[in-house]
Image 1 (cartoon, one colour):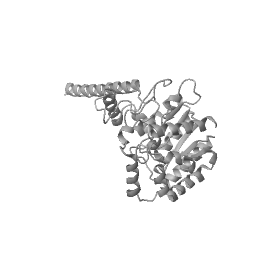
Image 2: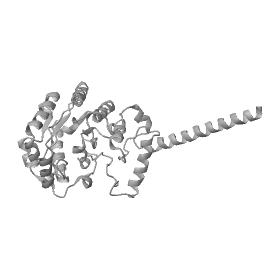
Image 3: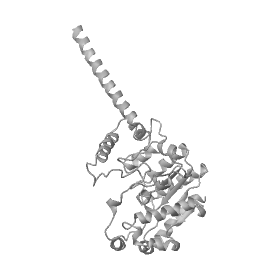
Image 4: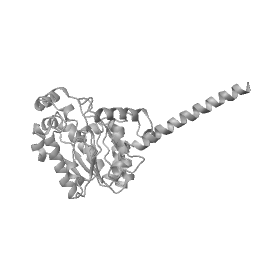
Length: 316
């Protein structure tokens, strides 16, 4: 009976040792791959986003972004495709990362700001639009320490490996195109959103979208908290209101103007705001070729906005 008992204990210890060894190997592999730049040196590394953009950019905001870039753009999908990479050369004083996120709201953007400030970033560009504050709450998972340690082994991590392999091998190029979100954070989503006839898409929006612009109270409070956090850290962000196609803006001008006034009152610094919906920018917002649909910018539109933002950044 004693021999059986010892044999059973030996089996249990062997299983525990085997499982522990396997876990250590898995953690070691994940640590070595370090696709979010959390555990190994990140200087001069190029880390693209393969999957779950919001989770990935949150994790990249701990070390990769602040140690490789000194300026960060934040916003929703409306600014997610702005490409500053041509200006991120060795001679440029500005190294700009696009941390905007598809479908994000202020609840998901503010944690990035906190991480980036802790990492030493002192230059921020924030794209403000009603999408930022129309609702509140994380849409995937809460941005907290669990995500950080999940980078050593989690369901999302292994999903990211799978999607990353699919992208790298171009196995599903229409669904998971290679290099969709590059090491500068630029999301090249144009092929997903582009409409054949932008003018018709805008007319459809004018006809069908009759809802008033909503501002969630909790979201507004979070936006105010983010601006206050920047202010406490003696950071003055450059903020711009995303350029809405002229006809859409004019139809809801009262709503848009109210929204912009609410945001401006929180920001409290008109000199740091660029209103791309003013009459001065009608040449842009009334030009359909600057858009790929009723809201998102075309390559041409992106280039114009990038130039506008860079001009202001370089004179601050």
